[in-house]
Length: 80
Image (cartoon, rainbow, N blue to C red; front, side, top):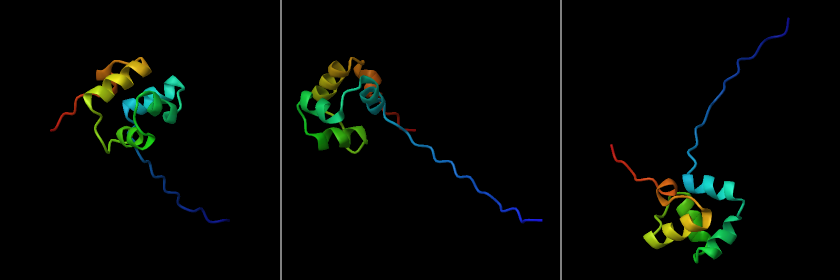
């Protein structure tokens, strides 16, 4: 009788930013959105990844371009 091997399953949870979800849903390429929002692709990428915070003006422009409320794209951060 063949031996059965033990299988280990690992589940990884990834958090996707509301901004990234809105970009994907819009169908706009991130490079085009960056250009229309008057910022570099690198800056937008770092904002999407959470490495940089968008300025108030950038939040307003992204919200308008994506047709999503600013608060939905950039929810307030709560510190426990």
